[in-house]
Structures are given as structure tokens and as C-alpha cells.
Length: 102
Image (cartoon, rainbow, N blue to C red; front, side, top):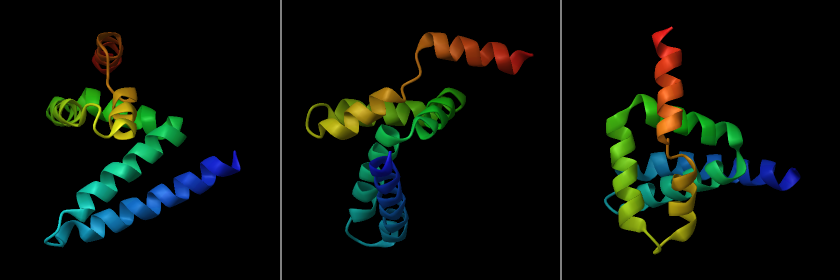
């Protein structure tokens, strides 16, 4: 349990550093953001659920993440594995549409 808290805190620090470094000429920020999101997805079920919901509600964002998953493939396994955990399947999408119709 303690290790999850430490990893979550570390991932949030990496995410903030990645956001700050997005303006740098070297694309270090994107790499830090990808690593931090992978850590957050792996350690936090709440984050995993929120990203899955976000992907269901925003098809364009989902397509971009899907493309990233395909490009990464087996090159950086921990990132592609983490993104795979947030991929909405057809049953998730149907449940979400039924809830939003009510």
C-alpha cells in the first residue's frame, strides 16, 4: 500500500515536470507525461477508470491514444500495457451510452 502512494506521488511529480517541459525545444515533456500516466494507470484504479471514461466520452482522444498504442507496440511495453488497461471495449461504450441517455 505504501509503495502505491510513493509511486503515485512520484508519477504526479513527473506529470508536473512533463507539463512544464512541454515548452522546451527537446520533447522531454511528452516522454515524462507518458511515463507518469503509465505509472498512474498501473498504481491507481481510480485514474484508470477516469481515463477509460474520458476515452469513451471523447472518441478523437481515444483514436489518438489507440494510434500511440499501435506505434509503441512492444518497444516500450509498460506504456503500451498501461494504455491497454484504459481502452474502452464495446460493452463499456454501450453502458456509458445507456447511462447518458437517461
